[in-house]
Image (cartoon, rainbow, N blue to C red; front, top):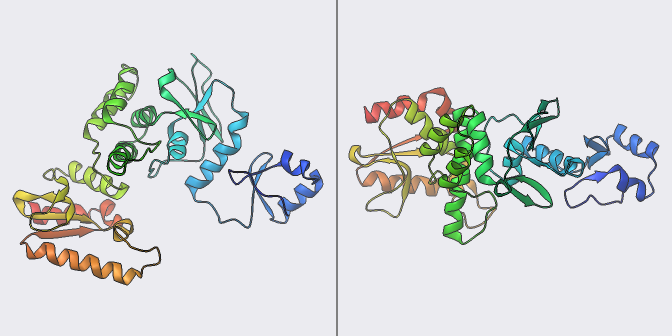
Length: 313
């Protein structure tokens, strides 16, 4: 096959026909595995890398975009994916669409149509697709997702604003707590709004990853003392993910992303990165502080909380 995919990495049946491929030939390419179906009449090349669940959801949303009615916008998890916001254990089987009307919501195997007010300030356009703004997306997910999943999205969106300020960038997924609260105020009385407001109050713009967000949530639920996030450690040039200065304890989420922090080259040897991280921890311990580390798996297993209880009492 010589025809190139479009800017979204998709091959539409109409484009294949225009390039001279007949329906029988297109169907044969699907059967033999040259093409992989994304949705009816839209494909991707099989020789491309298998997409993750988030990438697959984005492909399906881009494939379906031309078929959306003019008043519909992508929202909820689909908007979060298109805005590049972090998601954790959020179902991505269905595309989420919002329409501003009084009735007609429905849930089908491939799409969930929500009905809700859509003021102009809640709508943005990215790559020709209309979707809910970052503030509205966080507000909707805070009302409808379980707390831990919603907090991952909220922290991620708030931290994008911090990165914008620090790097002088313009991230389409960035928002502020006040903007999310303003959206929620328009939903006063709707199911989940009061809990969503409390969640936004708890959200932390300093949180740099879903692992840090989940750690902070589990620390809170366990009744442990509240930490200082991104604590600047006195006497060093380092900061810890979490700090309890009065108790002399530093908490560190041991994620792969953090090991890559400050890498000078993409192909840097991981052993060198780990060695530098050990040197960093040794220097922190030399100040008299206790360092408690945990992994992604230990957040949910209870080992992180047990280890912190031992140090924090």
